[in-house]
Image 1: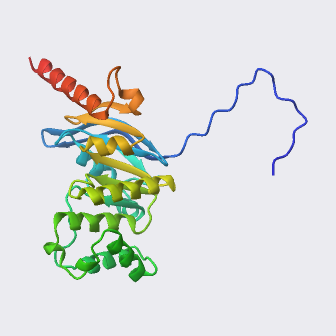
Image 2 (image 1 turned 90 degrees about the vertical axis):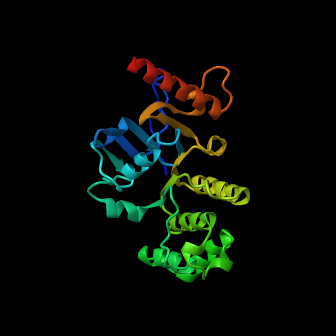
Image 3 (image 1 turned 60 degrees about the horizontal axis):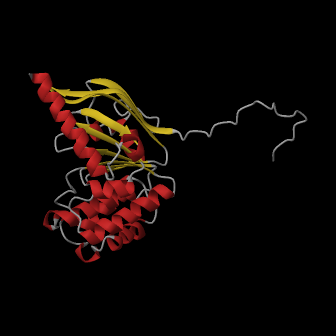
Length: 268
């Protein structure tokens, strides 16, 4: 209940700005070097709650390195990050308990069946009604008939479905997805897109790395384009496009072409 005030508002007072959503990912000067190779130059990125944030770049641009840094899989060479208020370096176990991750390579344990793998993940996350949860995801992705098949004998697409199931079953606030659609057929690409849109609409946040620009353009609310480990542009589509550019592919090709030209000129 709001209390009424006897004071009249000042006539020249400005309206209060809308409260900005909380940052769930904040990277400051984050960088990674492997020996003499710079995989990721220092970058600053903030992702707010409820965003569908996409990072795009050519193969080898540094997308997967970026995700691995933010999820505590590797330490940075410089700078740092906060994810859900957690330091990925000092509290990587706590972080992984509170997020969902789909890595670039589908990698469920080869010695477990599909059902055993999802059951193991559900038990590790201490979920209730495990049989129902596992059955739901096997059914959702159309692999109930492969439940007793060893993961090593599943197709790449079927293994990808298991990784998506494992990332989503505990209903995390934040999902990290590295090329999640690459091995899926068109039917399940569409079904997965709809699932992710519903997830964000319900309050979830997604950090997506991909080079499938058509799908990304439909899904993401903000973008970052990177190449050679450098952020070339970031923002909404309207903020990063030039006049006459109508698709994310147009923007991507222009930025990457200019980046390559700048590198060549710098070497001369």
